Amino acid sequence: MIDPPALDIADLGKRYPTGVEALRGVSLQIAAGEFCGLLGPNGAGKSTLIHCSTGLAQPTTGSIRIFGHDAVEHYGEARQAVGLAPQDLNLDWFLSVEETLDFHGGYFGMARRDRRERTAELLEIFSLTEKRDERTRTLSGGMKRRLILARALMHRPRLLILDEPTAGVDIELRLELWHYVRQINQEGTTILLTTHYLEEAEQLCDKIAFINDGRIVAQGSSEDLARRYGVANLEDAYLELVGRKELSRSHLTDLAPT
Amino acid sequence: MSPAQIRLTTLWRREVSRFLKIKRQTIGAPLLETFLYISVFGAALGSRIDQLHGIDYVVFVIPGLIMMSWATNAFANNSSSILQQKFQGAIQDQLSSPASPLELLLAFSLGGFTRGMLVSLLTLTAGALLVDLPIEHVGVLVPALFIVGFFFSQLGVLVGVRAEQFDDVAFAQTFVLQPLIFLGGVFYSAALLPEPFQTLTHFNPVYYMINLVRYGFLGFSEANIALSLGFLSIATAALFAFNWRLFRNGYKLRA
Image (cartoon, rainbow over all chains, first blue to last red; front, side, top):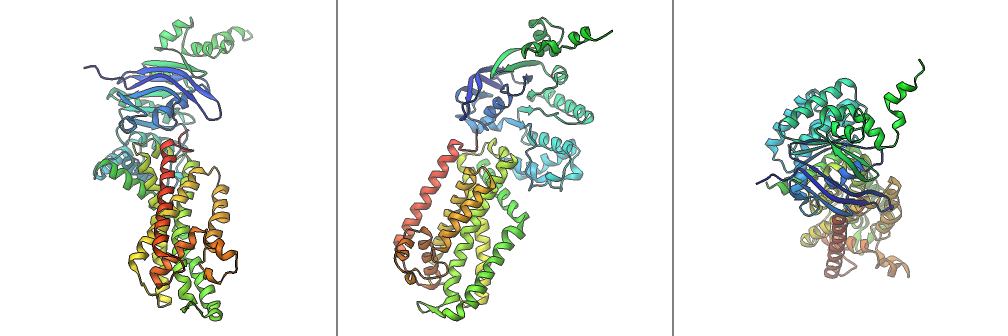
């Protein structure tokens, strides 16, 4: 029997009550074990797609299946399989670092002993053990980012969704996070990553999907996309997509005074 | 415990943990407020009013204060907690979990219910130390207090979910809840009011709540006990059903 895709989005549409149509018939499939990057300009629909996949937004049309479970009809099984590290640092101010992980585990039905062991393990991995009793609001930005990733991994999700995980973090932490997500992907966790850092997507992702104006406009490997747009690299392919090829580095180099 | 039970108890623990971490504000302040009410209305004003329906004024007032503690704390806890979590975005961690709408609603409700119960029990203890407070009908008192706590928990959830700014919660608290409670007869007997205020009081659900709790403690009520219990149970169930529908639809919780 063939394993169902980790994420199977078919003809997904989302219109907000304000009338904004954020998604217009998005179809995207991510195979189990894949590392997929979702790239697009601000307002293209990346976060809406993620919110629809995790129950934070309700799709207007179409379907989302996570490891074969419909994200609306069988939301319990679907959400159990997903870990979300959102773009915003949405930590609970009233909780300590340790409680953040413990409570998250509880929200996902983990037994107390398992929560305790998993919390200790993640605190160690993310160098947060010494901060375990501190309230989340006292942490630095980098520490908050680590904790958000640790929280997303707490219930051992099979699909990890990272919404701009390295936005605003220093180079050291960025490389650390890259190393860790690459490792968990190699251990079998499927990853969907949105980022504005094209280098990040190129380094980490097996597959990249371009989203623009609520539609998936192209997908494939970094090389496939460059070939499709007849350009040298992913960055130029991206600039073609958003209609700003005049910003291409090769173009700018040609224009530079000699 | 099953995963559903773990989810529910964790969601509830989060609510309790929040109010215990700011206990000066969530437990201390309401207790002081109640103590001041007892001092002013009981000791100061009570020396002039003496008795109401053959009951010492301070004893007449305390059951209403116990009810008021449960009601206001249940409401304040749930409305503030939900709005704060929406503001921080922290509620997303709960909304993206496998917890069902019913589990989420029950946990939020029970958070405020627990805080209300705690403050009420402390108020009861303080009241019992200050005056000789009888408990005449425990079989009415306990369900009455539970209904009051659950009703105002639901009201707090409703306001918290609907609120978009802290002003929305403050408005409901100041312009709806406080007048309903104060005009429901916590500090006086509705029978003393002139018309049309006496009749108008009968349209205030808090009037029936106060009478039920007063009957439980003192054996005195101006309203029919069975009808009051029935009416309030139906109102509480209707409010719960309404909230459950909001949670199922993701109203102002899920985009």
